[in-house]
Image (cartoon, rainbow, N blue to C red; front, side, top):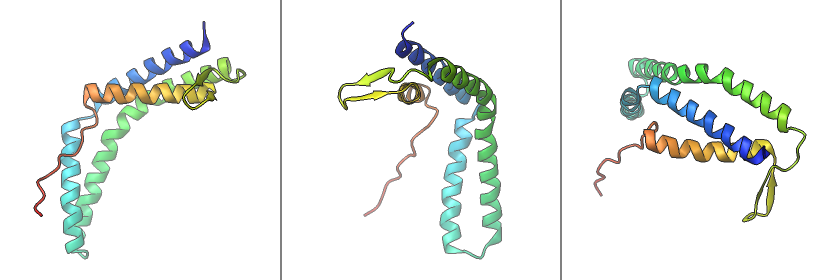
Length: 141
């Protein structure tokens, strides 16, 4: 099979798996709440830099956010590492596997994988809404 197609298929599968695991394991609503709380606390911290309670609360929220985002990484890390080892062993000796005519450059297997993976991840995150954009609050001029 053509290396370009094989790597693209692997990138789509791995990106889909990773995004789906993140969607299933991360409570997106809670992540948004934490972000909003952190922003409020940052403002309060600027007004009262000596207040230790604000700093403790920010630390607690940061810890919760990290735990929330760490679960999917633990689950997907080993399979992704195994896939990368296989890709490197299979396509590492091949020079260019894809060519971008617009930029007139050739891509090795890793750059082709990264390009496909980022593209697929962005599309899936938009579909699954795993990364919500911050809501812009009305600004008074």
